[in-house]
Image (cartoon, rainbow, N blue to C red; front, side, top):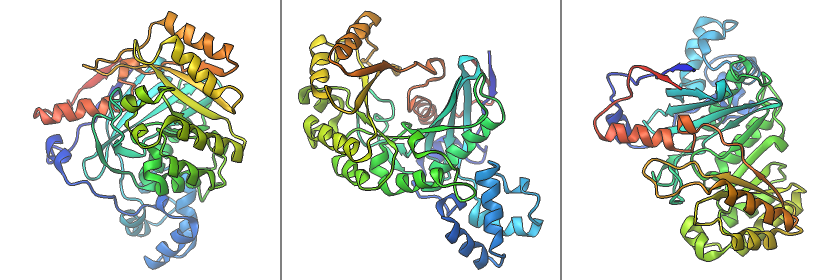
Length: 392
């Protein structure tokens, strides 16, 4: 059993009030800027330019997010720099753990009351952070908890990066059981449609992959950007000269069903979406990850496995089947294991590389958006996050 604190919001600002606040972008942060812009910012504040490298080394190199812990900076300097370059962007509301500490989920409140989630997943050979790129989501996929919340706003570059830096610090502390003490992978598969927040997501990717102290120094090949199929943005990504993995949330191989499951398919059909994905694979040499949530009696029929196999045969693509993590009150449920196994068999028989995603975090509302949805429900009912402990 793991006990982690639930961190209440300020009593001066109840949850319901915070959630009703008008969404707004946060103040500027160190992570919004490249190193040259950081130098310009600190000199404008009357500090020598080398302070930018000091701050960057603490934040990206040592994973220190609290300026008061940067004790090699004079106190007066810290006071000047806090509001302009290191404002608080993320305030934890709930932190939960399961899988014997290998999976950890955090619900964050942003400066305007919006809620986002991030997850840290430890494996014997790696540690992966799953981060949000938007508060809520405008894609309206009916089986997704986040999609049912609607879109609140895009996240800033720094709000995205700060999730990763925090989770990298958790990994470095040794808190992720049975895993290396270094974050090695980031997947943009949290709340939101990453390519709908295109400029900030791409800038965040560059910040995460630029060597320290300017960035976090992760490998581009260890970054995954997902999309439901925004074709113009996919083609724009193809031209970026990045080597990230593109994950396409397909969920159905036929337009009739995909129109329902992924409403953006009414604008860009399966064939066009797959063409854009294959263009990315041809340009980068990177295998496309086809994400497919198996939903009982909806998209798990053998003929759909055969059709998916036909569409992907001979292509640089891998199918990642996802056992659906049902949300409370939803009509959608995971496919039975025999059905899942038959779907896998048919895809592999068609020559398509296929795996089933490791199911993580069910007991901590692991599906994207579930914690935020619960918090919003409590707030709308007049409740607040309890000042208590959560046991898993």
